[in-house]
Figure (spheres, rainbow, N blue to C red):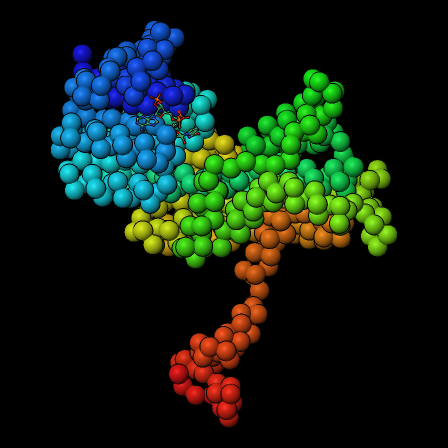
Length: 485
Ligand code: NAP
């Protein structure tokens, strides 16, 4: 029997994608470098659909219908290149090689170009949703050639998550676009998690709300514009009691957040394409600071945290003031989250320019509505914001009429919360940098004019004038007369 698709790399992600494909009626040829994982999968789940067991890549290729589709799900980095090197001599023109792992988009661009020269399609696919998503329906962001999507798309759409029956899978753009969009998704995820963390810290440190009380607040928030998977699981985590100590679990977890790199890649790419993804970058740095545990402990000895005699008493813990503060935090969280999305989507526009992609923000927002970690009701509203013809779409999410009113409504709370964080010494890097981003965008004059003056002074970098065309330089060290540059 010819298999519809082959999967090589059967650790948890590959195995679950293979099972998802088989459960959806596709015959799936299985391969893993060491056959043990193939046998384990067939033994445990062989009855879920049609599987073809193979031991070598040659056997895998042999078992496939044409054009062949081979999905690679091995460890990202060098292993992907190793598999491609062994695989490509076995394939024929028009066959499709799919990398559905967490590959860096520049590597995907390189691999796509190399395989295109050999007449093969290389499709980098962003997959979000972890193990559970891979098995039951992930959010899928495929790149590669549009032609390859005609053969591959229907399969991917079938196994993807569905939002109101619509697949969370659509062709995103050529070469590395799929992995790029997935990377930005992860960057937004970092920011989304960080703003929730800041809200928790502020409500605890200044509002005096214990984790279990906060679980209730987050549950309540999940019925508002903030409704999302991350808010939902936050309530669950905050409610969890540690079996050993009886304390809230969050109090016994080491406060040092790990990262696998996609947030860092997003921040770096933001710098490269000149797109200010401040919320994402601050979230990555916040995790870095959290990991500097020794330095933090030492600094805490020198500059103890908590209130000192110079700080006014926290006024947010009385009945009434506490409720108002919690509502302020909710609004600050919503506004900061909007900024994170606005920046992430803006970055996609800059990257599309840089890499020649034709990215459709409305379609991309639709892919994130189910199956992935940032799934949220907000994405449906974001889709509406980008519903108009491309030329009529807002230049920035914050300018969409769906959100301007919300921003205006959140603004006083946002300012109060950022001011409170600074007054009482609670770090809120994304709340405050997002507010600065908003204030920077709306400001008629920025101090960049002075910076241009300084640059012209020490380096003759020249400047432009607001009142006439041209480029100018002031003779700073001499007559101080302005000349045409
Ligand atoms: P993994 O631990 O990243 O990789 C293990 C698999 O890679 C095994 O099948 C292993 O084969 C194979 N492998 C490693 N080096 C190899 C080489 N040189 N040649 C051939 N095969 C090699 O597996 P995973 O956790 O299932 O993740 C797979 C991919 O999905 C990664 O890119 C990962 O980052 C990504 N991922 C995505 C999500 C998501 O939510 N989208 C979540 C987790 C992971 P052996 O069994 O023979 O060692």
